[in-house]
Length: 86
Image (tube, rainbow, N blue to C red; front, side, top):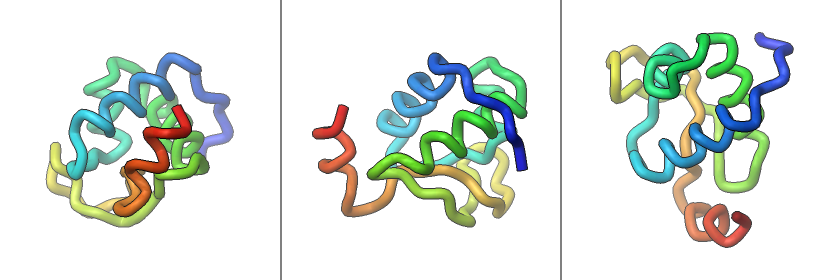
C-alpha cells in the first residue's frame, strides 16, 4: 500500500474522470495512463479519493484492461450526495 501524499491536481483530475466515466471504473495502472501520472501517484490519489463521501475502493473489473482488482469508483446511490459536496 502506498504512503505517498497525492498531488492535489491528480485527485481533482481523478474525481473528474470518475464523474465523466460513471459507471465505469479503472484500475490504478489504467488511471495512471489516463491521468498521465506515475502509478504510485495514481494509487495515492485513488486511496485519498476513496475516503471521501460518494467514493469507494472495491474489487471490480477494470474497464480499461479487464483485470479484476481493487479500484476506486463512485458509490452507487451516493452520486447525488457527492455532487452536492463539491
